[in-house]
Image (cartoon, rainbow, N blue to C red; front, side, top):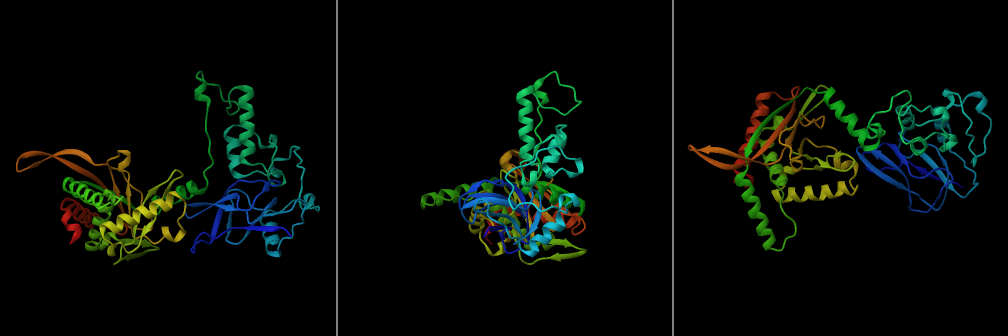
Length: 416
């Protein structure tokens, strides 16, 4: 009996997932444990492994399609093995993709031959990503031979055709578009937005559309804080500790202390209701190659600078290794995003909704400040606080930012 591959549950809060990319196609031989498809959910993209040895018999879910946890996405088994779909799966397949009457004739369970004859535009099976890529290159989908399930045209089919055109013609460009005098300007890379990138794109757009965002900016003199960080790391090294204290850990602790004194910034705006929190569940943005995730340090108010630093390190490693669960990235009450490593000073971070505020941290800058009329070289840290004006006004937002700056400029306050 064929083995079902189902939409997995990567975390307790995951209810559905989206097919990001099929790594195998129908007819491929697969070993147990070999990745067959990537699935995205809540900014997490994970590979789904084959549950057994066998052949990919049938793929029932298309790329970019969202399905409930536990729903069948493919079948694998021995070559020629009959597939018996559960009544629920058969009903879902029928309702999701109704066939014209003339195509309703009984088909064999597995088709080893694909009819590549051109079809009418309304009958062409094509994935959204493939259709978008073909359109960008001026290619009619009717001319493409699909290699996906039931002759479905995939993104790889379009890419193969584009590559062939480039080999034969020397360049690939949309129809009716004149060639540039500079051949290098004719090259266009078009990538379908899906997986983690699509989740981020949707959430960032929703954040800006559904909240009233405003950003306040100011500098903090962190000369003394950097000296404290340097001394702390020197002591750790003397004690044989391999782990060091990052500046982000100190900033995070300062933010937690400031939030406890100004809880108006430790809030969220949800469905017309304003929530203010006594606890601080701190989100710390982590940049990945594919995008951005925000793992959460729960009850950060109960942690020391060093404990917060260790949490940041562990969660950052988990994010880079794709080991975080959905629960690790839900429930934050305030977020910090640090782009100092890129050299950026000030910027306007976008709210991690429904949170009322987010703190942006830039790169430390060399500056000069006057103390009793004497110019002195100082290290200045740019801070950018974006807040939802529906939940927080400018004056209390400014007080929070002033409190945070005061703690950073008097780092002994981190320990009292």
